[in-house]
Image 1 (cartoon, helix red, strand yellow):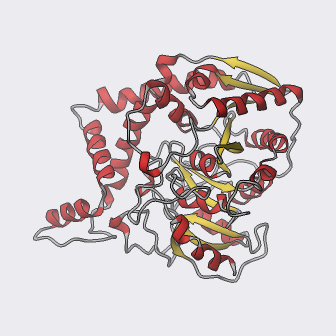
Image 2 (cartoon, rainbow, N blue to C red):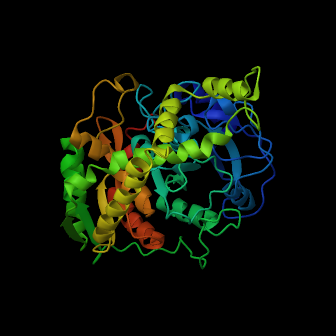
Image 3 (cartoon, rainbow, N blue to C red):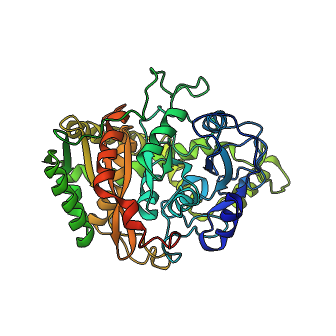
Length: 452
């Protein structure tokens, strides 16, 4: 079977695809004929782009997102649009109008989200490259759950023109690959200023495939409060074994601290800022200008009916919270206060990053949960921190990467590396050195059902 037939054959098991894309003649370039999947919040000219939501179920853009343009120019074969939590709001991959996406290692478990389908296809070895987006942890967490590499570069390094927004100050474009070398190729192709995105950075060209992978003399920091919040002893033991191997390679390990009370604000600060920005960003989804329209007797009624029908319950709750936080009567005490606490978090996190080459931590709290177990109990204080610490890199705009680490109960787990702003080359070099120590691809030969 060719790649498109293989992806279609996986659909019953993974539910990872929204729309297949026709094969086009490809240009010569670093991704010549390489199959690439696109999260379905990337605009694709002439191809349905739903954002995973009912209100955009008939939306066919007239332009490509800038990163899609760059993939085409690099010779990539764009094979499909992938599933996501509705409008990228969600962390499980289950908040999708056509049912949950499923983990390639166990279809009873979640992929993580919101970049669910992209992670599933790369984890299943159906493609080696896929685009995602990351507002809180929407690339790195599903990468950890699905056993692949997930990379969120510095805010603004990858332009976002043509990506359906979630929260503008937190949204990052990024991608999934199988290896660090592939991540370097993708970053070379995708990085760079685009005049249509005023938040994109105008920088000198860097070759992200020319890496120093030596670990000797490099400093890795562990934030003790976050590690202490992690629950799975087997996962922790695997992580600490890797730390010992790093020390054997001549790396220095620092145990650093952040104020636990401040760390506990990560999730509420993120939720308030993200919900407020999402409410503003999606005010244009009204059933009038584009997208699905529900009839009514007046313009106001059409908009009300279209939004009521077009959005799922999770989005409606988030829009209510966002509207409340932006209201003049509450904005100072809610949205503006969240922004001020964000600054405290970023400053404290920067103090940690300034002391090391990279922060290293387990990516998730546990293996991917079962779909049937979601929302079965309230999270403890430790569980909230263990599941939300990746958001620090969205609040700070710092580069962050998940690497597969190994397996617990037959399911993949990962480590997350984070570095200073615009330190991608160093970060990829460290990741390359760790990749060789871990040798995940050798481990997965005995576990991944798509390879057996």
